[in-house]
Image (cartoon, rainbow, N blue to C red):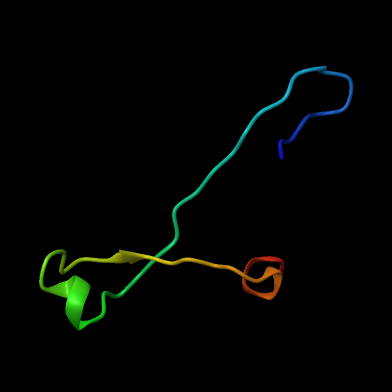
Length: 46
């Protein structure tokens, strides 16, 4: 999936990492944040 401005004729693939506060298991290794895994469209299509 990519975004293309009309008439430009090129494609840009865009990605992002969403993070949340870590749970106890991840926090022991990485106390700042952990990635969010969104598996259903309701989680990201808003």
